Image 1: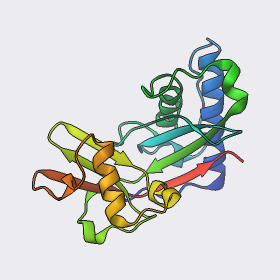
Image 2: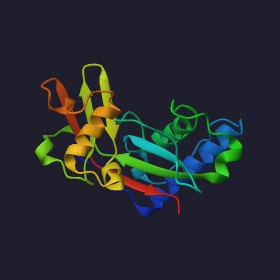
Image 3: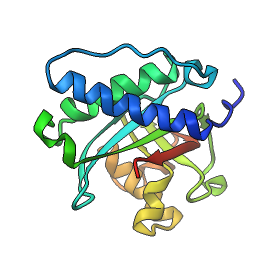
Length: 186
């Protein structure tokens, strides 16, 4: 499958609005709203990650996403916004009263493909490691935000998957790469 076309600025603004309005409606008990997308880019099957952070501290509050393109991007954003708020096992559920202090970031992913460690480009490639029954994923911006080199990135990916460092080098480890369009609320 070819990489999806890049999203327009209007598409990105629409998806941020969709994520915010979905959270407002869902967390207030009004259910999941329907949206009528006007752009074909929002209807392409594409996986998304939605990250929630506290506005005042930038502290992570929730992050959930999909790795496979199973539904239109607009639907993925709606579902992952809700999952980030109420289904990230690392955090207590986000409440409606917290929403004014929540900052939303969205990543729209390209299809995953196998990659060799020597071909990884920091800041361009997000990575997923699969080994037996373990898996871990790091978005492309993560190593940049921590100033990691490639070895640190790969070892942190192992730890994210619940595996020992250097597990990515083992024969039964599958290393996959993807790219991502990332944007956030102002």
